Amino acid sequence: MEKTHSINYGTYVLVWLGLVALTTLTVAIAGLNLYSLTIIVAMAIATTKSLLVANYFMHVKSDSRVFKVFIVVCIVIFLTMIILTFFDLIFRYPAK
Amino acid sequence: MNEVSYLKYEGKHNGLAGWLLSTDHKRIGVMYLAAMIVFFLTAVVFGLLMKFEMLTPGRTIMGPQTYNTLFTLHGVMMIFLFIIPGLPAIFGNFFLPIMLGAKDVAFPRINLLSWYFYIIGALMILASLLFGGGPIDTGWTFYVPYSLRTGTNVTFAVFAAFVLGFSSILTGLNFITTIHRMRAPGMNWFRMPLFAWGLYATAWIQLLATPILGITLLLIMLERIFGIGIFDPALGGDPLLYQHMFWIYSHPAVYIMILPAMGLVSEIIPTFSKKNIFGYGPIAMSSLAIAFVGYLVWGHHMFSTGISDTSRAIFSLLTFLVAIPSGVKVFNWVATLYKGSIDLRPPLLFVLIFIILFSIGGLTGLVLGSLNTDIHLTDTYFVVAHFHYVMFGGMGTLFFAALHYWFPKMFGKMYNEKIAAIGAWTFAIGFNVLYFPMFILGYLGMPRRYYDYLPEFRNLHVISTIGSWIMVTGIFIIVINLLKGFLKKEMITDINPWGGTTLEWTVPTPPPVENFDKIPVITRGPYERDEHK
Image 1: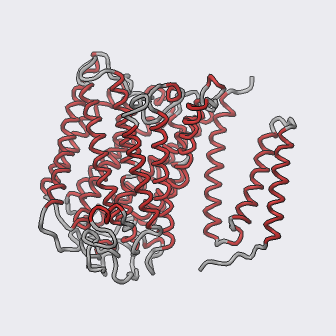
Image 2 (image 1 turned 135 degrees about the horizontal axis):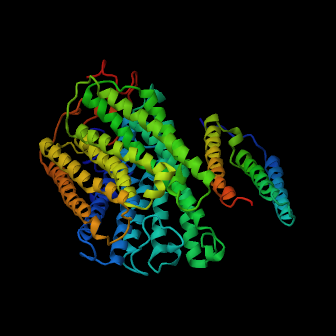
């Protein structure tokens, strides 16, 4: 049976404000030169935002375990693809 | 209502509309079958013409541009319209719900929508031949930067492949949900037929990998229209990024083609050796292992493109790992046959042909997965031979096996078994005469995708072309025999002509609209024979 979701509107507004704040942070950080940390910081913010959207707006937080497992499997495969692609990009032109 | 077969049922719509608007998984499966046979035979004719061109050096029947167009169309139609969707769309749709003890798939309307996406995509591919800059000439891989610069109708054809992707994603979603939610009471995961395991592993690939191809193809279109510079080196893009993204989908797609086919082998072998399958658990788990490791090996298509040495070593290692679960399957199939009461009927004959062809294809894949030998063989006929042994010898042969295995159940009619066996042998002989010389040609340095060649390659090309005639004769015999069986007036009444043990052999022939009067309760493994008659 489908479960009813117990998240109240106040939480949705808070999460939305959090997403707006993180977007602002992304824009602000784009102006700074963080060298090799740039991609890591951008990805960290994006990951946090994705987690908020998935957990609250997509109700994953209150869903059954099987969906959480699906999502984790998808993320692991996606990360593996990114890492394997970067094995090419990072080592293609070795530093002299 | 449930006494009427799905072929004769008349509901809200009758006649052609009764098929085109039907959400019955069986009718949708048959509609896929009808469409795919047309596309498959068309692509066979393209292949035959290409082989005829290679009969003599220089121009035989066509010039280079026509040849480029033909090998592209042959590849696009075979890959995107036949091999990738073939077994899941036809036999998955028809048999998955029945094998699980369900009345239909989880989302019947989405299932019909998938078929429409498939047909629209296919028609768009055909339409791309007729207008714009003319038929595409990029090869089925649409490699940049050529696909960005050629004046042929790449944008439209790529969009067609994009639309076809939706069909695949929706089918995958449907199958995953059906398998999770609609198994009959008592059918736990390890009482599920192995064909369903193959479809389950495949469905995850369809769901997770196809969107990456969709994005990649969209980027090609954007690059061609707006020149945004993601792949074009002249604009600061990276052409190798295209190859990464393309093969992140297209290598797992190889497993979309082969995993359901392997599941089918695991159905046919126990039926015709009258034995429980040997190693059910390892076979089921090896499907998931192949699907998972298959995601991680795409780089082996790029060994000679200039990717980093580190990634070449990693991808080579991962490629060799895929051989392990594939080997597990072959071992278990052979072990099932061992001391079985083997009945060499046409479906099993096709399966045995598959095991031999696929083993040759798999072992030559290891030659290509090894870095040093790959450098010598990349983009030669060796790759063409390996690819056809794996894909056509694999999925193609098993497509025929599936047709011969489930034909009586699907249509309630029987074909001539002797002629089927003659067709199978002719096909197998022609296949080897056609493709085996290509291994030698490739080893000697004959490059793929050329309409011309040096005179020293002539003998092997002639043998290969003769092989194509033999193989097509075999296909002709197979198709005509099935067609004759289909057009026969007399129906068979035996619900289980092969002595199968899975649920599709317990329902009437052909199956009624809702499959089961009463949803069965499962109390045994799918291939256990003790309690089953």
